[in-house]
Length: 199
Image (cartoon, rainbow, N blue to C red; front, side):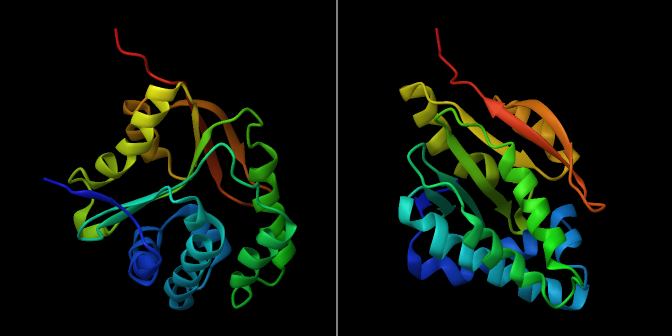
């Protein structure tokens, strides 16, 4: 039985490490942080900043009681990321990218496709590799998906791994676009979920 809880600020360091391990081989992570030797540290900083400065304020970040994964959501009223946010996140690639502008433009390309219609945004979903495939991700997704269904609110995400697309489809998401990022970046799958109404 997986006990789902809301993440606290005190748990950010541990969850950042979990997400760094979960995204170590992610196509966007390998594009932005090209040095394997520095990638884990950079991803740790990336997710720490993302949670503590951008998303935790909305109180919609979920984990398991034993911190095996994290689902980071932004609610419909959340502030959209600005240029300063993109610069802060892109700068973490400074050790490995000769041109940080390519990272900023890749992030900007993703943001430009972000729907304007009110929705819950799944910014990050990751499970510690030793615990993947054991239901953690499905469990920590459920609180917000249930709320979406109860309140009639859509949800949106970007999947950077094609093999994760069927997982999201099982949870009601549908691919709306396949986007190839500029400057030789990877392909990502933009996915939208309409509220699921039971009979």
